[in-house]
Image 1 (cartoon, rainbow, N blue to C red):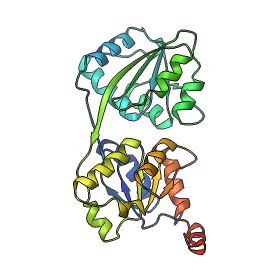
Image 2 (image 1 turned 120 degrees about the vertical axis):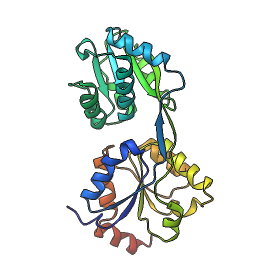
Image 3 (image 1 turned 180 degrees about the vertical axis):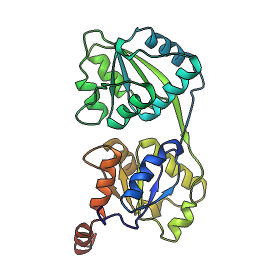
Image 4 (image 1 turned 135 degrees about the horizontal axis):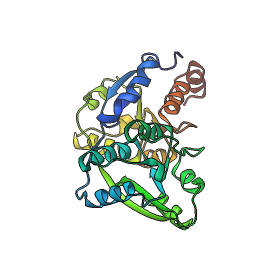
Length: 270
């Protein structure tokens, strides 16, 4: 284990249902995770479109199931249980944005052989999915999902059924972050989505705390879209891993806090 993160106090902003995976990685690297949930996952207000799409999926009326997050997989699992539906995955093909989502599909939905793009980005998934002409694609997603993926798949000739599978709302609970920041007890922040960044700022502002202090900290983002949101919010020390996974995120943090990198930073006066 590298000493880069040993003793570093790192804020985990993931929803409570997801936080453990990142906490485990932080502990394994010698870091100390601070829980500050910025997101909470809740069902959509109207479940009927999701129920209909799931029934159609079970009936073999789609060619592809495209999954963009582990949250989506969990939402599908919960609704399938309520509906009493069993999926026969051999009647369609499944694609996932990255290995963590693919693993969730295997664990929660029993789906193996999931197609994953070489680069874990929406654009890569949209451009490299091996679609047949007029392929029927079921795309369950967050209410906040951007239309990029559906738009690109449509341009490629697919018929895309986009359905809201869950809502992402701002979370609560966790450490007293304002006090921890005041006491300089935080070394870095982690974010795995743009919505987490926005809710982080909202939570701090609602509590009367300034965003200025956390903006000076190292903030690790899991992908370029999240990094762009962070920079727009005022964060100045933004790092993005080459591999857009939790493992990549931890490696980026380890590199950032490595003795060689810190010595270079002090030498350059940055």
